[in-house]
Length: 419
Image (cartoon, rainbow, N blue to C red; front, top):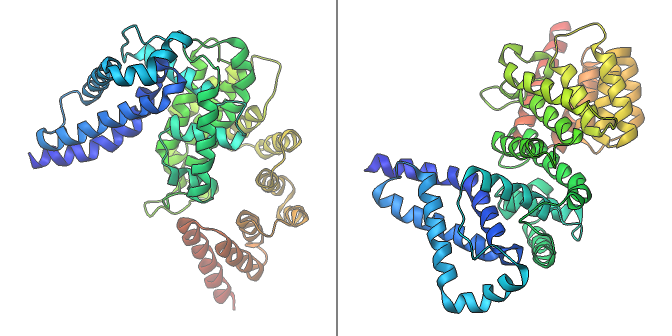
């Protein structure tokens, strides 16, 4: 029994992350967005009951089916409860033409349709882009307020206020979650892709919980983006490009960090650890992405990631530099400019790369000093060490601090050997 209880304790958080958002999406489709809190309450109560029952009896043979059954029964009880029904649901059902009078199932198709509709409902133009992303992280991905605050590097109170306002707008929106319309898809697709892109990046270069990579967030972003490509209404070339990018980046997860969680530089990664299946999938979705006439930043970033996962060739860095040149014209960011400088140094030499990097003068970014430390390492150890020291002072990542400290120690040791 003790073994079963321990197993239940480990299983529930996993299922909560995996199933909470799915169940909420299905119930919201059933109730309507105005009653999203009621849907969340039912799902939360379902997990609370699971924790009580499973801690005594152990997890059932099919825990997911158990959760769906309990949630469905709780929904029926909720709708039968006269007082609550009359005061909170009945009027809305009559005016909103909801599906509450019909039965529903937690089957694959219903979950998939409900989650897809929820993605577009959450990306409400009435909210700011940041608010939409916060809401998406909470409702679609099950992030806690603290995790969202970590992702945005801001206070939890700020996120709470942002979520409160976003939820009010979500409830007041006339978006019909039952059936997706092409006009709504077109008007919200850009934000949907931006949200999924940010979610993946938070997992790929995680700033929360001291993890270098959060594979669960990346997997969730891939799952939601895959959902877009599987529906004819949302299967755009941009979505395919984003999915290709995610696959290419994910293919190098096992090689990006050692067992101590420290960063392994690209050139030092064990390529046998790269996931060929994900690289093949990236190639497949990149080909799909190139079937149209439009090029997005996702196309260019996927192209860069593609060249990083191919065997080294004479012109590899020239191709990467050209893609970065196009990328900074479409959407400039300091990180993109720094990454472009790295490719520039690979093509034209580290000395010219240093000159190009110093033009940017991004002295408040740790990545700026990391790059200069790397470029100076072969010719000027003192300058390289100084830049690595500044990078350590600017980064909040313990694993990055460890990696940079090792680089400094290596350079210091080499300098002593020369003397």
